Length: 450
Image (tube, rainbow, N blue to C red):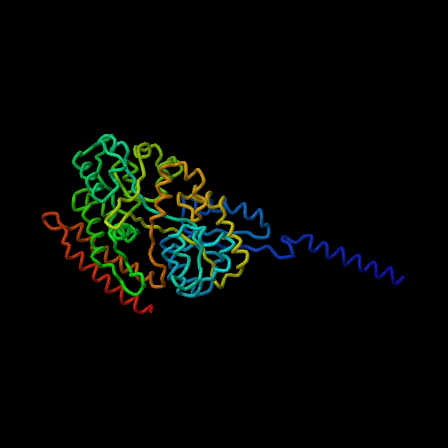
């Protein structure tokens, strides 16, 4: 009798155990978890676009849900730095590539260097983008490049055809100026819209430094010396790049009112046919090929007549700015293992390609550029090539302080450009003074970091 009682008890225990584990949402009886990821408005529908990509992840990982929160760029810096100091953090956070140094310098980000091998190693990523993966010289990897931004020249093919110009006429600084001069002298009006040679933003843009950087680099200049101890923003080569860029306004290629606009407004003018040439990123291709009802400009005069060319080659070669955004995990995040699974999923080829199509940005993984979406499209191929000569700023903790210094000094410089003397000339000495002050202010910050 005792035997049957014991047997009955064992059977009941077995049934109870099976029922408990049979109802568990994940293997091993783990409870379902919800991960929080903060992103910025990388597309017109940022939450929806990322959720669609992560739907596959959640299907493969039924015990993990991902909540996507979009944070406006204007509020993101304050929100992220506050989180870093308060430890009230999301599981995953998007960081602008130029922000990584400052946030890493706060000591709040998890070191992912031991996991990079799972992604194929650092050589699997666009080299310029990988430079922003962690503090230079630290040996740490505190973020993984997610998507990439680069700049190129957009031009009106109908204007060029009418004037007997080709893409090759944009190839060097000298030919670039001659091309703009030819467009200026033609004084064209197409479909009732007068064409200005060049659309270019001034100090009211969020890209003030990024807009100047390609010209500084192409002239052989830098912002900080390779030893990271000295600001060289006022070097003769850096000055040469700044003066060339400013001269495009001085020569009358850019209406002064354009210098009160930001990049989005300049792009809109180009899309509506008002400019012959502008500088823009890969997302402009998406805009020009997307119908108006979906937020694009397809059907506009520019959408039917545009080409993409690399930045013109300067005295020291060709260069462009490479930026973008990375994904990082805070040390205080509650679910590091599950969070890494999400990051790893977003780095696979299919996810990278899908997000590039949704946002218009470029993938961070080099293998994705072999897809026909990039390799078969001559316009997108320009950006693929741009990544080979593209550059970015050094990933150092003080860059978050240095960037506002440069923005302020370059902004004052633009004031001289928008208010030239009576002969329409800009006082070069005043620009030199601003660069020297920028150098001195940067040097104080850099010295404190050491």
